Image 1 (cartoon, rainbow, N blue to C red):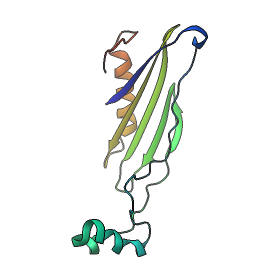
Image 2 (image 1 turned 45 degrees about the vertical axis):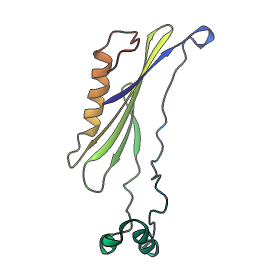
Image 3 (image 1 turned 90 degrees about the horizontal axis):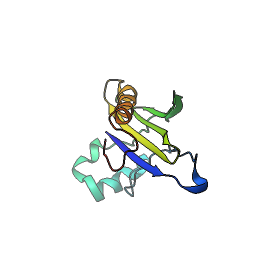
Length: 137
């Protein structure tokens, strides 16, 4: 799956470049237990029947950010095996048109997410004729 953005450039914006900056994902759910002392209060609010099974979450390793050809890549290994990959690529389609494509893939327990995401981005660019003009990937 990909998310695509078309950019129509005019005037002094000609040659403008877009990009994306990966950031660490944090839960938006308030009150997740971050220590053993917080587990009982969390279970009281959300999951009392599972109190004995609740553990303090262990964060996955930090993401590694690198370039693969013209693509920006963020790869995060997962404790359960496999990994999550986010790939972003920006292409100039004409003097006044750019396209940006981002793909997010997760593979468990296989380690195929990065290759899958790279293939999704390539397929998105290969499957349309510039300028995209409202077409979807």
